[in-house]
Length: 149
Image (cartoon, rainbow, N blue to C red; front, top):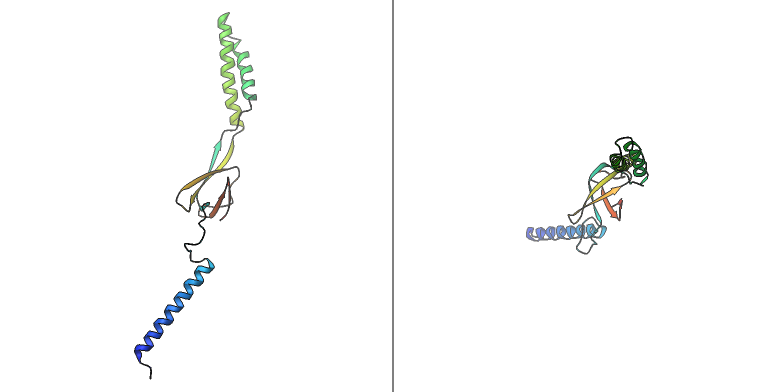
């Protein structure tokens, strides 16, 4: 006859073996992280995606065109040294304005993506096109690109 005390001991041992087996299987399959697993230093979660308009680069064409136009207009005012001063001021002002106009014409939209890394830090990337990942997506940062993490 089996005593009830031995029966409880057998059940307890069975449960312990079952739990040990489940934990081992979870560790082997990667469901349960281990201290031996590799930590992904470039992995994280998308925290924010923001579209931002930035001025384009100036090639100098706008500054030259603006400077010439400003000099022509400035030359229409004043006499003698005043005319020369107005021509120079018109050229300088026109060059600045032309340069700014060129930057505005060439403006573009970039996407600033903030990734909260696994180590707690944050990285912000500027992408030329809208990212394929939404806020909350797990990603890997590869240089200036995002990959599925």
